[in-house]
Length: 226
Image 1 (cartoon, rainbow, N blue to C red):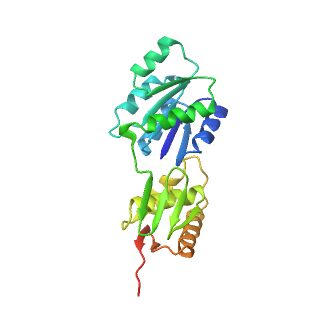
Image 2 (cartoon, rainbow, N blue to C red):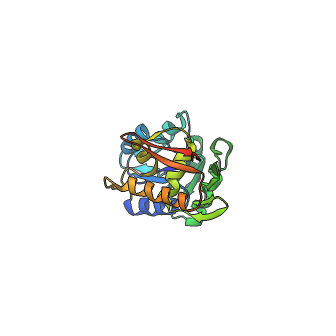
């Protein structure tokens, strides 16, 4: 899952990002309508948390744009503009939910889970291939009947590979999927994380393996037995 937080107060944006980090996926934070539009040009989002009043205008503009996407994300407006008429305007403008500031963190997470459960947002909660299962909500994997809690990046890498099993995912596409655009990535960071995940799968007796395609990317395939 990838989420977009549109919030012009950096401290609040970081706080919301940490809350959403409890869920599985990547969180990008922007502070204006212009930056939000730029983000939407490069990424597909499952969820958008949108402040109403931004430095360059009313965020209902970006809510309308989100609503026109072929794969529309769930939208929660999170704003100090919480008068009854504001709520009605936001919901009529395309938001799925509307929460006033200040807010309780548990309530925001509960509302996020609620909007993501709606039919258009349903997605598999478990990905599997061979004797490997990944539970997306908890980063827990079951490999050859052994349970293991993966690191967040490891789980994201495994999810990306499981969703494209037997197909190559390029290095660039994998980086885009598992890192936010504000993350600083060292040149060998991805390779080190893939290597660690590959080693863990092997040690646990996985019958699938991550193969490196030199100069291209990675592929998840069944292990060829002699």
